[in-house]
Image: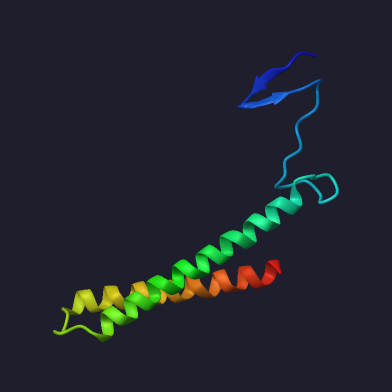
Length: 97
């Protein structure tokens, strides 16, 4: 058989290439690099979420005048999202260890 493109994936000799996302762990040769990349990304996400959450708390605590109700709600929603993201990044980091 020839190599013919099918939806952006080339068929080689009638077989499909191994999909690293759905292949069993024994068939995927690149699995260890993927776990290392997830751990590295989790560490970066933890630092990013923590830095922005700390900045947001500092900004809210040192405001010289009272913000409008809409801005206050937006700040608390943003802070809640940051804290949820930080918890998720921590869980992802701990799960990959």
